[in-house]
Length: 186
Image (tube, helix red, strand yellow):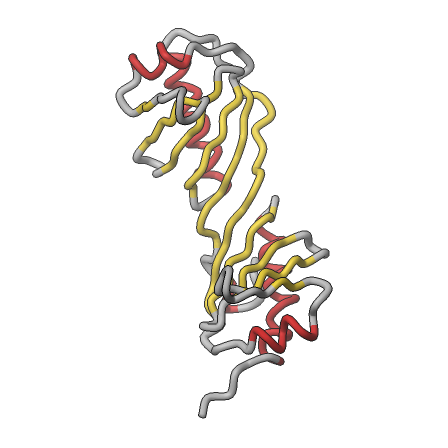
């Protein structure tokens, strides 16, 4: 569990993949499923949504599926299983192979403003900060391999984790750096 109090309830989105291990007729799926949309000119997958857990699936003709929007690893797996079950009920021999968490997106607020210029200057090897293009500093941590978006406001987005603990470790690693570049209020 996170040892830093600001790390609690950090996870905002989980992206997972699974192989249904069968070829799919996307047009047939879109026509039969109520919660599906398919516009092959715009995107080569059926977009399907369920309310519980509130998620979106991208279902490809190859049988590969991407599930986004879950707030926990368990929810992500449950949602992916529900989508697989829907596909089975439509008459396809869908399996549930190689389920994998691909990305965990987390966010938090350190509750103090940050001097991004100073941070970018002293951590140049890891930082990219171009305020004209994007208001946040992009910090590419090597260990764990996490990308952090750091904003002047003290809000942080962490992305790229495969396991939840990596987000906690990344936050613990960056927190002392953020306090060092804390903006002093006048």
